[in-house]
Length: 226
Length: 304
Image 1 (cartoon, rainbow over the protein chains, first blue to last red):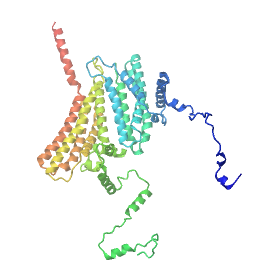
Image 2 (spheres, each protein chain N blue to C red):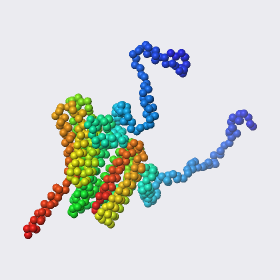
Image 3 (tube, one colour):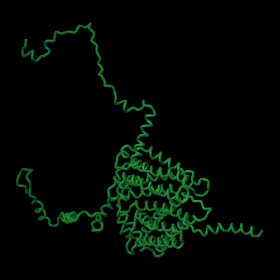
Image 4 (spheres, rainbow over the protein chains, first blue to last red):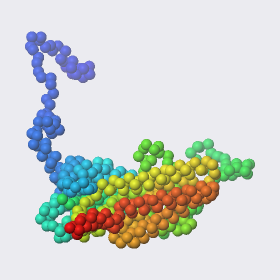
């Protein structure tokens, strides 16, 4: 029977319902969780070592390609890493060894000297551009400067081959042309990244130290004599 | 006086005039129209990036204000050192040209630095000079000896370290000594002109810039040309230094003035001549050393 009192008490009709105690009530309280795909993406512990190494190598290789064709891309800046510069610096320092090593005279730069020139020079140029008000971060600048040594390292390898094959004035002319071209390429590639981060009235102030840095490295490559 | 009780009604400012009538000597502040007029003139004429040359008074005011606010950051923060890199490309160009061509009466610090010494110029000029000396010395040795058969070319990379030590100690330790000396004399003699340490470092750094073309000229292996270029560079940079420090010294005792000026010139001469002798040594000395054992060898064979 519907009455105003009943309307205000919607469950009034159930007052005499009782659950017998001998029927067990059972069920599953846990909330069904979807399979955690996110965890699998972040944890790389289970992947094979080859995959890990190849991923980093692919990143480094991609940046090498970006240095070869310097466009205004943000790959070098966004995902900076220092593996590439380390690899290039070690290669360059190893290739510059073995020059005039048998004489007591002052010879070419030692391994440590090349390392110091490259890394200390990069740090000083980065500090310089940050003090002049640049917007790149410290490690982004180091990354750009290190990757742009690649043309000079390639020139060093070519020079060593030329020194074996051709000798005398012709060999020197070939080496001079190769080193000059790669020096220009390095400077152009790195200024394409670095000068964008500076206000226009200070661009030359930032570009000049980079020019000096690659000039000194090019000089070390050109004057290498076995 | 406000005639309405409503506080949001705009009230006439008769109070100021009434107050001024009662007290004629009260200090009043009036906003000048000058700034706005000149600003509109400048914007009408187009923005010229070189406005430091148009209106020296205004930039001097700005420089004064900036000079007062500049060194407020403590010296262990990054911002403190950023204040020393507050230069633009044309500033650096002007300062380099001003240090190469000294004009009598133009004090380098007062004309070019204008209370804004920078560390960019001194540091990169010193670095460039170090590498220029090392590379030019190497090239000049190569060109001199390329004829002789027993010469083996070496890059002589160790000389870079020597050049760096000499140049950087000249550019930083001599200003330190000079600044300390001027500070000590300022205690005894009241001087209107006093230079800060950074300004002295700046002058010394920029005065080295004339040596870069001089050293590059030294590659050519004519002894008279080398000495000519070194002496010319010596005179120019020495005169820049002397003209800069003369106003700070002239009120002093004459003997002290002579001593300091001759010390400045002497150190400059020592640097130039020392670098020239060490990095660009002439071949006559070396060939004399080489020829004497040869003559000794020839004599015994001719006697037999």
